[in-house]
Image (cartoon, rainbow, N blue to C red; front, side, top):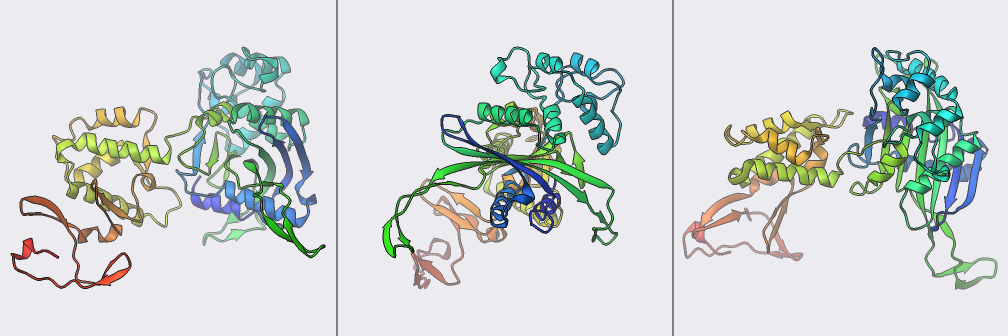
Length: 456
């Protein structure tokens, strides 16, 4: 999914155009007990309450693609029968279960037909097959359509979506699995909604044609919100006209994690992927995503930056000079500027990074072992890095053990390196106004020595 597709869904969270059909929820305490449940037709909620939920749903689709919002695909963990695609026919099941449980072949079908075929096939799967698919687990921890290996929960999400959130057994199984896999020491609220969006066509000029539609995007959106006790304090009581201690209550905070299934790719349902949300881009809760959703998370934003920095340092070695690094970040910022109007995030694969180093001053001898360095540093699974994760578009920073210099990236050219008195120095022009701790200072120069050795 790209930012335009995310924005299109976020615009739906309004009473006049909401596609949400049903909302369910489960309040869990710190001891992992289910304290309360909710199951309502969404439009039956009071409007004031509806707006509060809209804020939560918008937050679950907020942030930057590649940092807070991560596109993930369901892994193929088994071999498909010859001439068919298991990803299309039976994602989430063992090979033997897939062959016996799903008659026919839905591979090669369009997305909408593939989704319908998969839903029908999953609904016909006998209970005994779902039990065998999760063999090796206890009854209380069993989860429909789970594989013995990690992943493979796509089938369950398809069935949950197909039920319209009206099946209590499926909902309880979902809540149980969240409670089992989501490691959080305090109270939290699981919110799950079902929606059906009648996708309007777009005219040649990009305008939406709301009276013309061929497809319906049916989806689930899950938000997991911490529930905190309000802070103690004083408040005014209007009834008694007094100031007294405030009654503390439990309130729902914005979501810390969540997911959208299926992904809304190319303005249609992509049942082979989902969009994962994390409020903190450096704490993605990888085990939760793997055990609940069956997907492996990519490197966090911070890890991608560390990986890129290590890759530059190890590859360039003694050639990792100030000018080279400055040129690298200048090139990255120019790349982002060129693509600022593109809905898709800007990515760097191994070849892109190698070309970047070459155009920034690295010679062929330096790049001889680049491919090996990339595999060792980024790993074989991390094939692409998000440019927004590896460069800072807001500041260009130089650090020494005692000094930090920060400038806007577009004015990095103001900083020069010179050898003065036998020492390498960073030189900053001071012709304009200068402040020290907020106090304007004069920049007059008394030149008793040479210009290069002048003391300010």
